[in-house]
Amino acid sequence: MTPGARVAAAIAVLDRIVAGEAAEKALVNWARSSRFAGSADRAAVRDHVFDALRRMRSAAALGGAGTGRGLMLGVLRGQGVDPSTLFTGEGHAPAPVASDERPRPMTDLEALDCPDWLAPQMRESLGGNFAAVMQAMQARAPVFLRVNLRKATVPQAQTVLRAEGIETHPHPLATPALEVVAGARRIAGSAAYREGLVELQDAASQAVVQALPLADGMRVLDYCAGGGGKSLAMAALARLDLSAHDVDPRRMVDLPARAARAGVPVRTVQTAALAAGHDLVLADAPCSGSGAWRRSPEARWRLDAARLSALVATQAAVLDAAAAQVAPGGWLAYATCSVLECENGAAVAAFLARSPRFRMQRDMRLTPLDGGDGFYLALLRG
Image 1 (cartoon, rainbow, N blue to C red):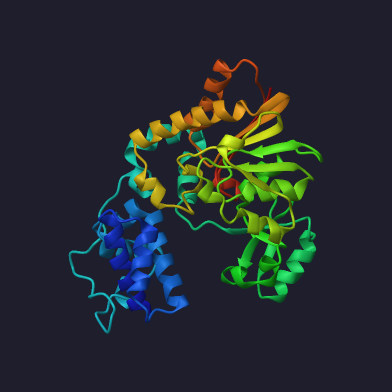
Image 2 (cartoon, helix red, strand yellow):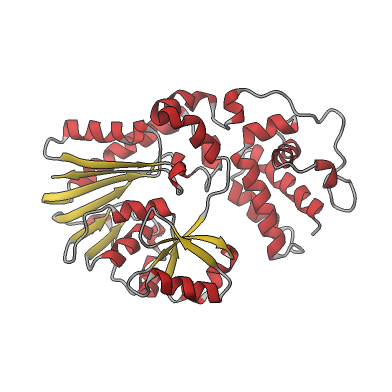
């Protein structure tokens, strides 16, 4: 595919997303109907689409319309690319830019790609960092790896990765964290990944795990394990009696194979089999994902007040259920990949008000300004 044809494909995918189709579904449907597209083409189209999703408001203003075509015009202009070099009408490229497809003035919130309804809460939660965090979320997220310290040191992993054309450097957020600076698309096929020396994991997520009071012999429960990334990270830091649980066990279907590859013991448990008495319970609760909008930009535009309210209620239920699994004197760790105070400090304060057994020990707030995703962690002792 030519560069212009890739832009045209992105326009078609974006039109489906604007019409309500989920981004991943729209991309998959396009790929299935475009067998001629090679892996590089699919990656380029995906990059275009996600660049537009991160900047939907500002791109629509720069492109003069909130359509797929308008969004791609805006993305290119925002990147300093003259759209006329790609909108040529030749071959499969989009039609030339019309005289009325001009940028229009935008509001401050449009320029920051912040939903109007959410701006007051974002400002309150982020304070003086509001604009800087929103600007950071307009860019692609870095690619991070977690070195599996059970199998390799950080320098050893870097050497193996470098031999396969993957360049990295350590990141200060977490001891095992490597930021990938070249060769990111080679990771999945690399020996380092296949042999369990490294896992893909955001540096802030790694920092959350590293902040947990883990010690050999502890009985630990990852209450909202999902795919099990934090379970694997915990198991790599200490020799634990570790269980992974999720309300939807299907999310954990790949965890046994991942644990075997990493060489760490993790058991999966169903809700009915949970037994209280854990030294530490990690509750990485469902949330808005506002701290990870660089990676999942569609979530920014799908979120609304009703959905946020429902998530806050879910977080309260998760905290109560997870607390019941903590042994006397044990730890409850509450985490979200959100920067919204209603999901973070306010949720913990409400929990403490109804659960006098627990006491706050400390908390941690990270934003994309720290390098990784936005994350919150509260450590409570019960």
